[in-house]
Every structure is written in C-alpha cells, then in structure tokens.
Image (cartoon, rainbow, N blue to C red; front, side, top):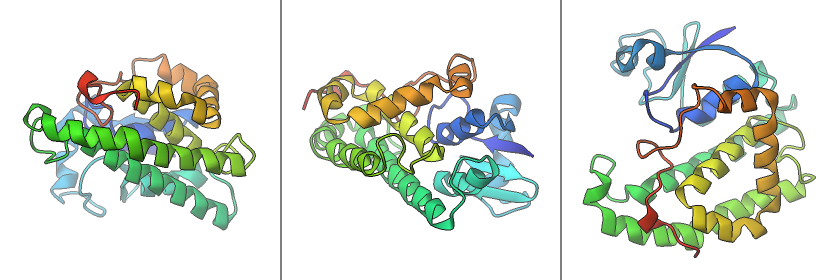
Length: 236
C-alpha cells in the first residue's frame, strides 16, 4: 500500500502526527506538497478531486479515499500499519486518547493565537501572555497529568499496554511542549516520569531515530503549532 500525505510545506504542525506513524511503520508514502508544492493541496480543498472534500490539511489519500482530521487518519492507519491493538475495544481507546491529544493541541495553538488565527502573533501578544499563564499553570498540568495517570494505570510503558500510534503522538506532544515551554516543562518533569520515559523510548525506535536524523524531519519553528516565544514561558 502506498499513501499520499498532504500538508503544508515548511510547517511543523498537525501533519507531523501522521508523518511519525508512517515513518515508524516504514510505510511507503509520498509527502505531496514537499515534492510537488503546496498547490498540490488546492484541488482537494476546492472539491475538484475524488473523495470527500477536506476542510484543511493534513489529509491522507489512499486509492479513492480522502481521509482528513488527524484522529481519523490515525484511526484508519493504525490497523493497516500494525500500530494499534487488534481488539475493537482497544482501538476505540486509542481513538479516545488521540482525540484528547487533538483537543490539547488545539489549546496549545490558541495559546499564541488566542484572538484569531488570521492575525499575526504580534497583533495579539498581550492576550497570548494571559492565555499562556493559564496554559502553563492549569492546562498543561491537567492534560499531561492525565496522560501520566493513564500510563501508570496500564503498566507504565504504553497507554494501551503495547506500542501504538498514541505513543508516537505523545512523543510529538512532549517534544513540542519542551520546545515551546522549556522552563515550564523542566519544572513539571519530576511529576511526569512515565511520560518522559515514553518520549525517550520512542525517539530510540530505529525508524523514528532515522527519521529524526533525516532532512524529512522539520525543526520546530514559528510557523507551526509549537512555537517558542520567551515571553510566554515560565517555571509556573
């Protein structure tokens, strides 16, 4: 099976959650915008292609299917790439966990764009500072603490007791937050030993390690979800 992944070039964002799954599984895929330019995305967004019209990237094309939304894409890819348990109940748990990650990622994005995505960060800095205070003090401990509890309740190594796409997404989440809020993540580190240990194990997986060392892995930057602005970080 060969897959086509569509996501904007130069942006380290939601597409990375899908890309990590494809890379970890050693799947055959083409990163369409990187190879053909962002204009490869346009016909799908305009409804001029087969399959359901996606609202926005990332989306995956396989045969005539167009699958959008990160959680839906990974729910589809999980069984095909052997990145989810076989039991239907466990696959539903994986989807639930991934959707919680998606919720958190939306809040993380809104930290630096609390008023409007269409406005520059510089146009909403004061609001972003207030939002970041809530993110650091309330939302990060709440979400990350819950994932820590899930890991502990399931043996400490994996949230589903075996490797899955959820592990890969938690790796991306911890990596991104460590870039975005280095001081706060360091202050929280002692409360999240299982989550950090999972992050370290994932980055040592052979295919993931090779991917992280390659040019295919974009560095975090100020064009994606996880953006580092020093004025938004703090120990509390």
